[in-house]
Length: 97
Image (tube, rainbow, N blue to C red; front, side, top):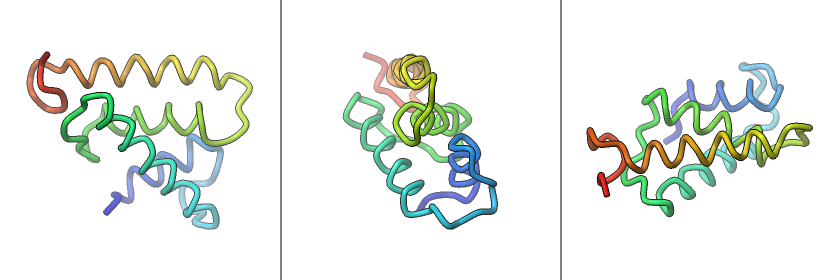
């Protein structure tokens, strides 16, 4: 189940009001795609309440969700945070390889 905070943050990243649920099917699909991408990159356990996860979702939505003039820049931001999460030495996300 996707937390309300993550959904609200994803809406805001897409330029949608935090309480506007009319595009939630698309927003939820983007959140799931982000989680799947994180796992496929080696992030072992995305925790929805973790600030890095929430920020990764924001970047992912801005890069891949809606028409965004700076989509390429947001994509690079997402890739950087994904790498950071993968190599987290505290074990919150990655396996520390």
